[in-house]
Length: 336
Image 1 (spheres, rainbow, N blue to C red):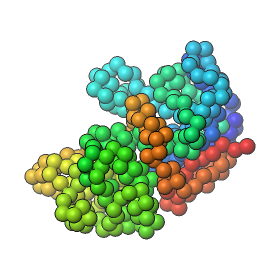
Image 2: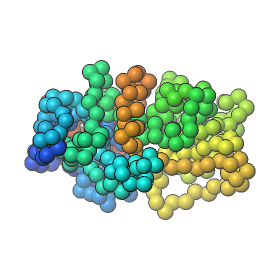
Image 3: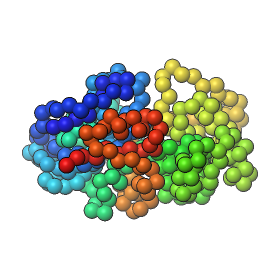
Image 4: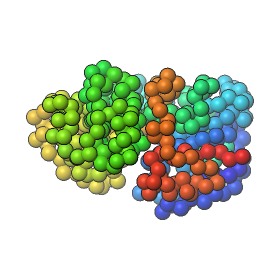
């Protein structure tokens, strides 16, 4: 089979590897589509793992079923790359993504390959059959939408929330759509790029191009945000986002900064308004199911986010499009 292997420093090569075989409880999935995530582009994170097959947003067709696996040949499925143990203290507290087993699990070799072996625990706990009306490309959004659903629930987004989204890249655009689906009454997007600002407006946000809490307050009609989702690792954006949150507000850091980088924070602004700062990592099995339901019900528009589709054999170009900002979201498709 063909696999797109990342060798570090932005270099991806197409290699041939043996086809995988399903063991007991496992399945093998023929990849049909796989999204590229922002974390796939973080060289400081991926280079230490290289060589590695990237891709953790795959949709595919079941082509092998091991003994005891509850799937059928030909089913179209979303495959989650991590699953928790369900038994540790963190799992019992519904913090599945912090479970040690969650971070230890993986699909083989990764989403950017013609065939993916899904270990038994992943197949048991977080492989979802797609309904007929959810196509392959839309299905690749299950994982990122699940991450956002988890984050917004942690932050307390609910009916009537006033939400600010800083950065309208792929995740920021999905933040807007999830917030609408969860009942937010007003959403402001902070985005200077004209095309991304227009996309944010089409998704239902009011837009300001200034990284300025006063501009957010004016756009909200004289109040600040209940929740602020920071979808950029820019230090200036993180620092200013603190001032966009109103009393008892939540600022959630959604983009991943490189470890060791520091940001100057006005702790006086946090203290006197009792602002909380959160981070959120990945998504658990409850979140992927909620994401599939949200996508199936039409709350997420794939075309608002996915700007490019590229064949597996041209995965290096897909990476370049995403890494250079020419694309908002790239999906890699199976070929032939």
